Image 1 (spheres, helix red, strand yellow):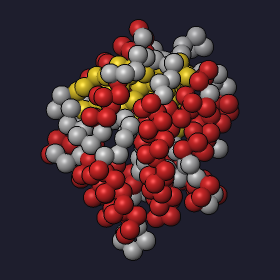
Image 2 (cartoon, one colour):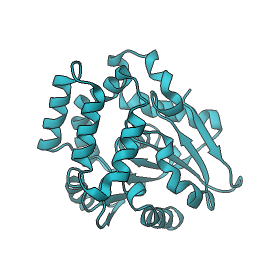
Image 3 (tube, one colour):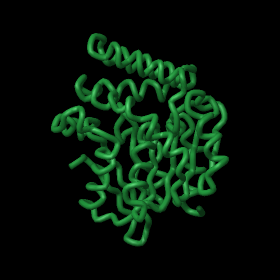
Length: 259
């Protein structure tokens, strides 16, 4: 079972489940917790191999690990915590996981908030992934992670987000990092399916205007998805909830409260 922590407001309040990205942990949501606890019950979870779930990834071989397995981990947490349905908030790779939960058990998903959503790997990002796969067994994984962090979050005012992810990634074992990294080979067909098939679940995309790798596909997709809306945050990179927490909290909470 994944490590998780709950914060109860009251029995009548809706639940919000936060799902972090690869190399992070539930600590990435520290700027959201206070605001969200005012109106919602909150569940924070550490993904397999991350944070306080660090040892869990070692129980599985590489070819058994998948986004579906990562999603089932979270569904198991919901069952353990007695949560029938919830709103889900994900960041970066976590957006792929919460979207997969929406495919697996849509009746348990009230809405989705996708922060720094990954909906397509462009030519540049596919090249970087291929480069990483080529050198992953001979180059220290933190070199690769730092390179990706600088490419995704290149500007000076992205430094807080970049440094946060690098600090959290240092807590991973190399084998765990590689198992997560191997998922990138499987992701493009899955993302194409996500772009082509819209769920009947209200979805908010919160993207930084400077998220040049991942914003354009979301812009195009939202034009064709009737249940989805996009909020672009100016002068902001990939990790909006860390770089612009006040804006992210205001926009996402308004969406969750009012639809």
